[in-house]
Image 1 (tube, rainbow, N blue to C red):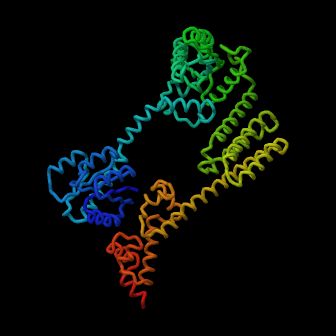
Image 2: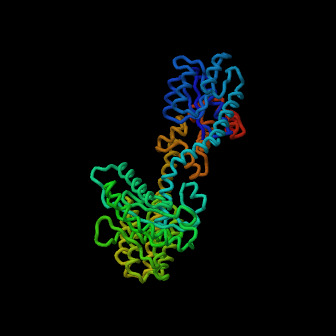
Length: 554
């Protein structure tokens, strides 16, 4: 939808152009009128306007002065000037300040319509222009560090599956590691911050720690990931294709691991002495494929959190020998289940958007993956109560009579779920979630229906008043464009079409059943003028109002 503002100090001209543009069908237009430059400024301050059709010479604020205000408030707005004067100097000034067109008042109405069409086409072209794409790319480059951090965090925490990642993402996110090679993980923790350090101080010092690491990890490429304000992760690869070309890959990586383990104490000491920051470190004992980064990160996090009795400057290494394959697979499975649960419990947007199918699909994945671990009591309790807690959060946000029933049902599964059949308990939580989705959908439908009913009632009761989208949107406190889309989606009928149909229905009643004159009927049902009313009446019924009255009296 586009918005057109018509401005002139001659009301008859403004109203005439307004009626002319009511028949404009090429694009959906919302029309506004102003009878002075000052009135136009008020309209511009309340509404985004796409095109202004204005007289170039007006008392008070001239069209050129108005143009400067338009350029300040809505720089992309197109301005079309109307004038009774074929004044070249005015034309030059208008064009120099960004006028899109210039139409003489003596020209036929079709020229005004054509000028508005050209302005709209220019707007559409500009909004799809490559300049917008180029600007978006520039802004994306500024956001790359943030996007890279978020992506790497999601990878480490299992929210992103590496198998779905394309190699070009490494280049786009400026990840200076090789996509096709394994990576070594080192997890760090700031044991405590000096009192009085600000958030910016802490961010700067984390980068200083990273610089210290790069200084000592010679021959390695290191990617920093700030996991949160206290934890950081280094992802590391040899700077070359292999650490030592004369060695086999496994031996070369073993040499790199020995290098890393040999310098971590030095990095730790340097951070304490130079930066006054005690840090703890936990390092992997072997390189990991990218597909296993999430599980490796989880192991290091557990290792660092357990510690060995020291609260500060812990320095730990994973066991060099790989655990049995069965244990590795079980840990990987549990990690994947936790990642699924985290994705689900963190996805409030699924409830907000009503995406029932996506929620159910993820829940079924969890149920299927969890089935082999029903006998693992601690793990099952962890997953089960994570799901129950998420549902409790959603239930607590309800403020109607359904809340008590939902809480009672949820309490049954929280209290008795672990004593019941575990398959049944998990599906009980899923069924409760489906009820939440259904209740939310019912509430949304009710609210939408109330909005539509209120709009319809207002239209029927105020046919002779302003029924523009802007006026109606203020009644229900919605954006005009959104109201238009919502109404069409809900009813299948365009809001402006519905208003015209209601006005026509009432007009036909007046024409046949009353003795009102046509100009009185025009005013009663809110048409712009008798001529416009007659034109629309003829288009809708095939008869003029007078012919229709005569037919009704037979």
